[in-house]
Length: 355
Image (cartoon, rainbow, N blue to C red; front, side, top):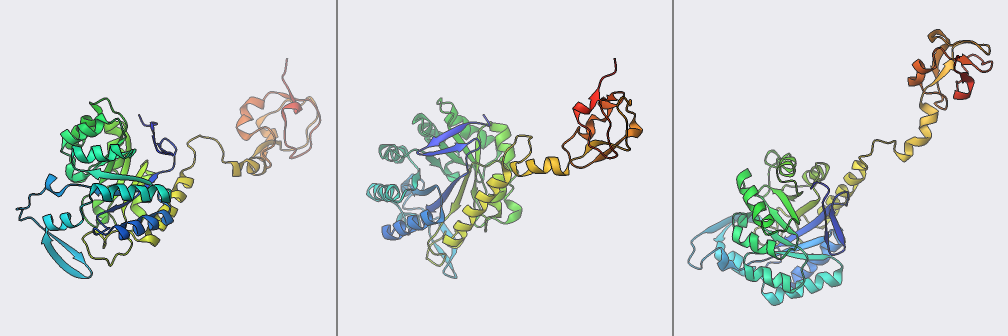
């Protein structure tokens, strides 16, 4: 269903609609709701269509006794901390989530989030959120994907770290519920992603394999990858976003700031203009040039009425307002209805068929 179109609030996604651009705030609020609101406001200023948060419950994927740690760069330092403590610090309560959704509504930007449990899905559905996002780390959680699919809301699936079989299983988990409102995001789960690991051609493979809408969750630096993804048919672009790259926390360093996100939006919209129409017709700006620059059949020398045209009688000259050069063979053997001057452009009324 390459031409499928999905509606999310007031936006159409897919077909020839502009790419749906998402500022992934994720955990870049650092557990501070005022920072979260300011980051939403900055995303609106950047011109995105939606902001995304993560309404996870840490215990859905980590136990308090877990000894897993996370190493990242922050504020110029190498940080190692407990994964459990890091995620717990940035966990959103249901009250937080509702507050942020209300702020998005007032700011005129679409809110959505990544849940990690059925309860998280229910919270979003109960708040009338119009699209659900499944993260790359939960790609293999078919049970949760099925629960998302049963809501009949559009479901967005990120495919970081996945192989072809895992992507297909995840897509089928949603589709087997009867929900075909599916958007699959190509994604590379490395932060930031080096250019040689971006692999934008996977967008083409996913679209061909799954016959669904395809997007791109971009973890690379800059906007080139996002622009390239749109050129390859991505209808959804997601990019991590921060108010300030220098803030403490694991994701700020590789996230886009306000100016970078503004630039991404601007360049994506420019690419969409460059892509234009698929119809094989002249661009509007070319129409005047068709007559001025194209070649017409013209008389190679002065000819009298009744003369039967041969190839030696014809040359090609501007403007293109007469019989086009490709009509040469069709006019040979016809006679002139009137005298013509040397280099005169030939028109259909200048010719008659021999009886």
